[in-house]
Length: 271
Image 1: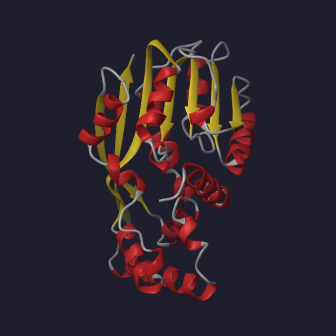
Image 2 (image 1 turned 45 degrees about the horizontal axis):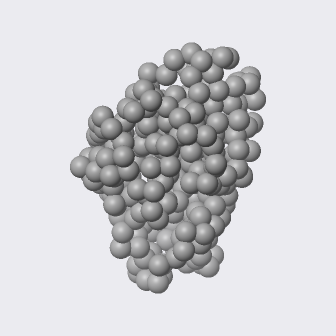
């Protein structure tokens, strides 16, 4: 099992690499689920918000819009390439109440009870000790504040995801993953249990089962390059990579797959 430092370095490397496709139109789901997370928080003007694993601002930027000029959003990520994209987007929207900062959210050293809302969208499962990580977020939340943890459910971009891994198992069995990090919290009961074990109170989990539309089979490959699967792709030699790509596109075309199943879990806790 890799150490915490190794896990952080690996995640940082993967998402810095994925930054070239992270904001491509095919990956519009980042913004969709980020916005939906913020919608569930009922933020008010003047609120102070911490967004960890913020990526390019899919939830942090909507939060900054909600809290207005008297509010403040601190957006943290370990991938500097994603942070720079977030800074560019916030400047384009003329948002002066948001700061994108490089850091490991488990070791921010920020004061206790200093935020009205804390958000982590599709990030908590990259941390080996999720209980300790959520406990640290809870510590920084003021009484009456809300913590939002958004994670993947049981189906994530199916059937394309499953086919992708079957091809990896055929071509490079050493890279095949029998489970993914979010498997630990892919059901409402397990996500709720994580928050409660971490000391969170008044925990509610909302499950959403939806579709992500593909305008073209190539959209799926763009998604592969712009997310966590990039780490696997970058370990393939060019010929194998192209073989996997062609097999994936052929699978989608042959089966007339125009939309992928995607399940999302939103956990909201109030202190």
